[in-house]
Length: 312
Image (tube, rainbow, N blue to C red; front, side, top):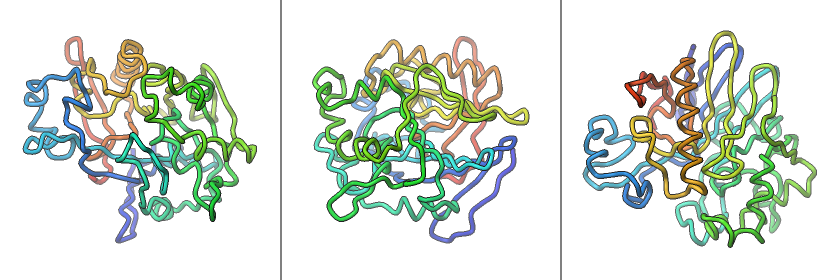
């Protein structure tokens, strides 16, 4: 694994290389959430947080305020001559009535993307690991009064189970419900209308280095991206975990799971693979160094090391 740092003063971009693939971390949002562990990860126990406080505080949780920190980030991959964007965050100017943390944002996400050397028209492929509001927001941007594709030359890959599950008429039948209100209308339908969407199911080969695989639970179509290149391995984990405490306590779920048991099962499979294959795990919401390697510890797992990305 090799690393390099962006030279922009406002936008600190750290890039690593795994085999023939270059990975850049692009931050949209990194701050203290308004949620306590009791709300965000409701089946966690106070003693679990206290047990891990020495390494969780301050980058993942504040012992003083009892608030969890979250990031929203994209991963930019350069592989086989293509620019691939994994997850597009919450987006600017989107109305999310039950998700105020993501509502009417005004961030410099496109500036951060530019600091990674990427213009919207450069992106060849957008991968939405699932279709929650904070993973599809920059699929579109506001042009006058219309939502238009942010990445006009890209194919948008969306998992078919989520493509069907999150249609507006089905929201009353979901656990997240109105938390995903307006998402199809402002972040999915416009790219469908532009003819840019390709759905997939079960598994999907992106290229010789990258493949998509369903990992349901968080949502029916939740997915991960496997990277295998030059002896290096990584997993882009989407929302298979939300907070670093879940590395040591993988039984803990967030409050946003559609299927609690399936979410734990998918997380367990991913962690077992990562530990057995020395694979870097890159979730969508981890602040601090943003990614990690793990090893087995008895019947569970522990952090083996953090990625060399600059801390947020």
